[in-house]
Length: 113
Length: 115
Image (cartoon, rainbow over all chains, first blue to last red; front, top):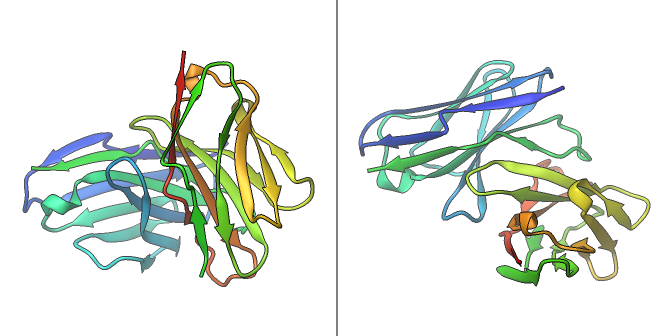
């Protein structure tokens, strides 16, 4: 069966520090991969998605970037964190079929101080 | 434009009573509809989906949802609520005729089940 791992679970970082969040998927190949941010425990904002290695689409211009160095690995990064980067970051994978749901990791709670 | 509306920010239900969480959508073609649940500090869990066929779909944890094309709705229901159903619920849609594969998400509804 397929599983998705996301770490760390929580992170406290000072303003101006770098960020690296990692997500890996097991049990499937060539998944579509996604990074979402959830602010204030509510709405989901799609940040990045990837349909293949090295292919990244950005939905919202911001202080963050994403990379997909391997088929089942998706990384969210920042060179210098802002206070506004605080939030709950969720990684998800999908098959690319319209009738298939997305499957989410357990998220990373990022607090920028 | 594609959109999903969850008109209730919060729904309060007594344990044992039936519950409904509302969702309406707007797409240019036919929709693929999904419900997810999120417990505190956790990722979203897929509950159920409507693709085609029977308008009443059954999902995990005793939840079901009814697709109503004329009302463009996909309300989530459960006959008897449990305290453990308290969580945040999200409705999402894809337009099967759309060129954009991405899910369009509702803003979420907080469900509180009181003992």
